[in-house]
Length: 638
Image 1 (cartoon, helix red, strand yellow):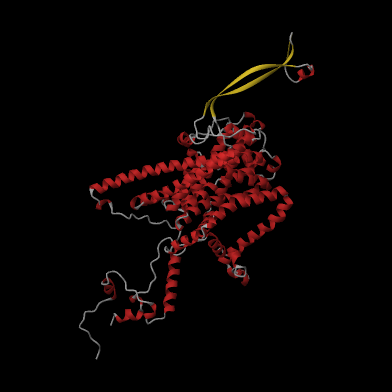
Image 2 (cartoon, one colour):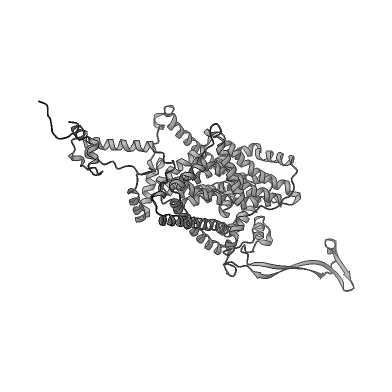
C-alpha cells in the first residue's frame, strides 16, 4: 500500500519562503553527504563566479536612498540643497587640487632647478641619445611639467646650445616623464581594491603608451632620422612667422591663489636651463615684484691706447676714457607671498612646499573621490556614464575614439597642462565613471594637446633660430602622432590597454606593486641606464644587451605559454622549475607583510571581511543550507 498523507504538499520554494527569508544553516557534519564533496562544489562555484565577472566592468552606482517620487516636499528641498552644497564643495576641492599641482610643480623646480641646469649645460652628456632620453624623463619628473621641459628644450635650441638632432631623444623622455603625475594621483585611491585597480590601470596605460612608443621609435630614429627629416620637410614647405605666447586660461584662475603661496622668477629658471652664468647664484624665488632699471654711462680712464682698438674711446683735454653703459636695478616693491620675507634657501622652501602640496593634493583627491561616489548615484550616474562611454551608431562606431582624442587635445590646450587633465581623468576612472576604453584615447589626445605649448613657445623664438625651434616642437607632435598610428589605429595593436589591465590586476592584489612601478619606471631604471650610458657604449651594450634579450625572451615565452603551450618543451610550459620568488609576487608580499607589522595585519583583517581577492562585487556566501542537501530536497517531493 503506497504511503499517503492528509497534510497538504509543500513545495520546496514555498518552504523556503515560509522561513522568513532566513535559510537554516546546517553543519556539514550533520548532512548525509560527503563534506569534501560540498567543499569542492563550493570552490567550483567560486571559480565559476570568478570567470564570469569582469573586474574591469564599470560598477552600477545605484542610489541607496529613496527615489524622488517617494520624497515629500521637505525632503526634496533638503536633497536639492545638499546637491548644490556637494557641487560647490566638488568645485572648491577641484580648484584646490589644481592649485596644489601648480605648487607641487614649483616645489620640484625649487628642489631640482640647479640640477636641471647642470644636466642641460653638459653637451657631452646630451650628445648621447640614451642619456638624452633618460635626462628628458628625469627632468620632467623633477619639474612635474612636460610643457616646462619642452619649452626649456625649445629655448636651448633657439639659443644654439643644443642642436635639433640631439634634442629628439630628450623630447621622447619628456613624453615619458609626463605620466608620473597621474601615477602619483592614482595612489590616493589605494583604499579600495577595485577603485585602485581602475585608477592605477588608467595611469599605467598612459605610461605604457609612452614607453612602448619610445622603444619602437628611438631605434628607428637613430637608424633613419625619420622624425628629423619629416619635420624638416614640413618646416621647409611652410612660411612660418613668429607668433605670441600660449594663452594661460587655467593660470588666470589659479594664479591669484598660488601667487599668494609662492612666486618663481621665470627669467632665472630659463637662465639656469641654458647655462647663463649671470643666473648661477640667483634665487628662483621672486621676492621683488616691482623694480626700476636705470641705465647711465660711465667713463673709465685708460693709459694704454691699444685698448681702444676693441672698444670705443673718447679723448678730451682731461685724457682718454672708455665709454661703458651700466644698468642698475633698484628694488621698489616686494611681492606678496608667504616666502617673500623668508630668509630660506631654495631647497628648504622647495621641501616645505613639496610636503604641504602633496598633503593638500592627497586630501583633496580623497575628498573629491568621496564626493563623486556620493553624487554619482542612480540616474545621474547612468546618464553621465552613457554620454561619456557611448559609441556612435554602427557603422561609425570606430569614429568615437578619434573624437575622444580630439576632445582630449582640445581640453589639454585649454588648460595648458597635460598633468592637470590626466590627473582629473584618473579619479573618474577609479569611481567607475569613465572606462579604460574611453580613457585611452583621451590620454592620447592629451599627448597631442601638450605639444601646442612647445609650438607656441617656438613661435616666440628669434627670427634667426625660428625654423629650428619650430622643428623641435613639430618633432614632439609627430612623435605622438606616430605613437597613435602604432598603438591605436589598429585595434589588435592596442597593447598598452592589455598591459595596463595586467598591471591593474596585480596592483589590486599587491598594492605595494604601484610604488614599485613608480620607482622603477621613473627613477631606478632611468638612473641605471643613465649611469651605464655615461660609462660608454661598450659598458651599456655589455650590461644592458643581455638583460634586454632576456626580457624579450621572457615576454615571448609568456605569450607562447598562454596561447601555444604545445610549441614549447614540457619544462617551459610553466615557470615552476624556477624558485617561487622569481615567478611569483607572493613571497615578496609575505616578506613585506612581516616587515610592516601590525599595520598590514589590520589592513589584511579588513580585507578578509570583504570580497575575496580581486572580485569587483560581493560574492554571495557559499554556506551550506538544509535545502542544499539532495536527499533533503528529494524528500520534499514525496
